[in-house]
Image (cartoon, rainbow, N blue to C red; front, side):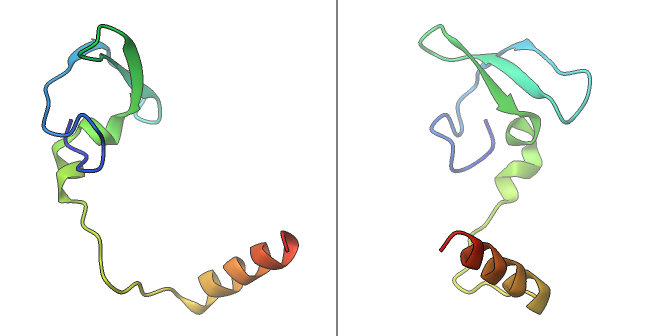
Amino acid sequence: MHYPFHPLHNRSVEVVSWPRQTHFAVTVRHPDGKTLKLPLWMVEPTAAQFHLQDQVELTASVLLAVAALLEVHH
């Protein structure tokens, strides 16, 4: 598990089934014996490159979309 914010980060898990298409989940065996489905990107090495930033930059269109969502749900 490469995704740094997953509880199984840096642990090896047994792959039970691999998806035929990348938008499906991979099924793995949890250390307790149960199976779980994970997004495929979480088990790829590139997931380890995920970093949090102190400051976020958003475009004006994104800010307007957030404002519109807040207005609808207010």
